[in-house]
Image 1 (tube, one colour):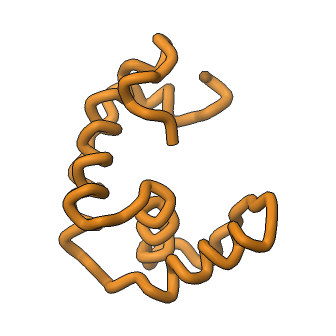
Image 2: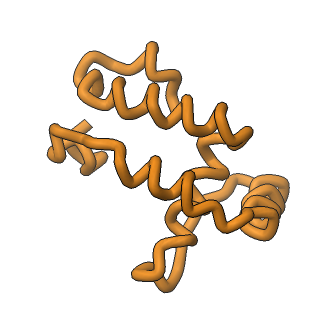
Length: 95
């Protein structure tokens, strides 16, 4: 969840999409974390979500994020419209 303006040089191809994602979050009063978790959770092709947490507070925030999500198809459409042209960077092992 890096600030798009502070990305390492090798991730600069993500900058435009991350700036657009930040705008979407701001427009809908969401955090990147809320949007990311609910984007995945709203995908009918995904049956389970595995998340990492460091403490109970993070788990509680994730649960609350899912429970409070209003099925906002407009947000999901906007995220789906984001384009990543260097697909190699979608795999974190290439970072």
